[in-house]
Length: 137
Image 1 (cartoon, rainbow, N blue to C red):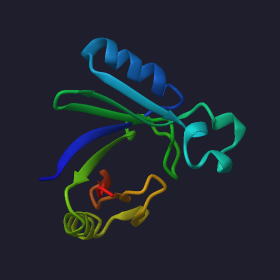
Image 2 (cartoon, helix red, strand yellow):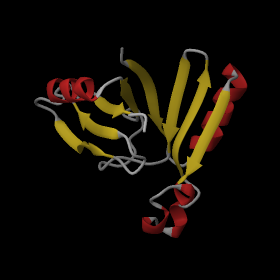
Image 3 (cartoon, rainbow, N blue to C red):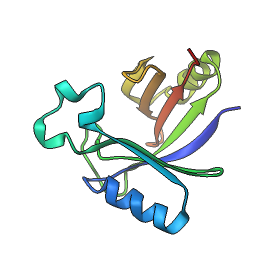
Image 4 (tube, one colour):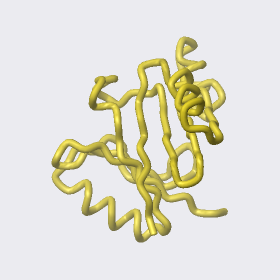
């Protein structure tokens, strides 16, 4: 069954915020900078230390974060997305076609640089969704 986690965008403060949350909640924190990612060669030097993805995990609690902003830039208050992790390719295709209907596509469903099927869009109510399916290789 699919599950949903919060994905929070920060304006250059992702590492500091996620370390703060770890201090409050506990758990394991992982973070990858843009310079460590597969997109490092395409990245301006000033963004190399920006967090492209982080995750704080404690039991069932998962908070993910990034310094990367969408096409409209960072807007405080609109910087939280619902990230749905899907269990099958059929499931992600089904959720994608239904949830994105009437919305605005930010990244079409396709293979991501990290190898998963991924899409990001705003639904017709203005909610940002990130759908991800990780197929074991």
